[in-house]
Structures are given as C-alpha cells and as structure tokens.
Length: 99
Image (tube, rainbow, N blue to C red; front, side):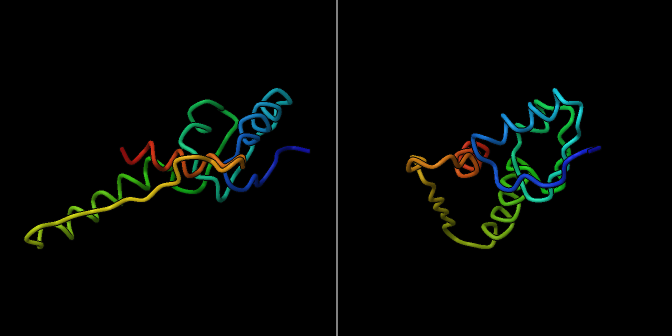
C-alpha cells in the first residue's frame, strides 16, 4: 500500500483516520471531503475539493454581486445547530466558515 484514495464526507472519524494514516507514513488523497481543518493539520492530506472556507468565500462573492442590483438585499442562511447525534462535521464547519 502506497497511499489511500477516498474518505468521504467529513465526520469525527476523519481526523482519527487521517492521523493513523500519517503515523503509518501514508498519504491520503480525498476527492469529496471539503474540510478546512484536515489539510491544515495533516501534511499527508491532499484534498481535491474546495474547502469549506473557500466555498463560503466564493458564495459571499456571488451573493454580493447579486445584491448590488437589489434595492433592499437580504440573505438567510439556515444551518443545523446540533449534530443530531450523528458524527457529521460538514454542517458545523460550513456554519463556522460562513460567519
């Protein structure tokens, strides 16, 4: 084994798995996980998807561009406050990146 491809969405296990792979000297290439934290914390993590921070930045640019032509622009962003007992980190990271 020379490396791992994949991991899926960002959950509480993502960090543990990435750490174990780092300790084993294995790189991780992920095509879908948009975590902003994993590439910062783990030199063996290579994400191909835009990070949560990159996504919210671009969404803000688009929203501002649309809003400039409106008389009274408004935006509402809905986010799940609690994780409902699952191990999801994606929603919480998106919310934090968009603040």
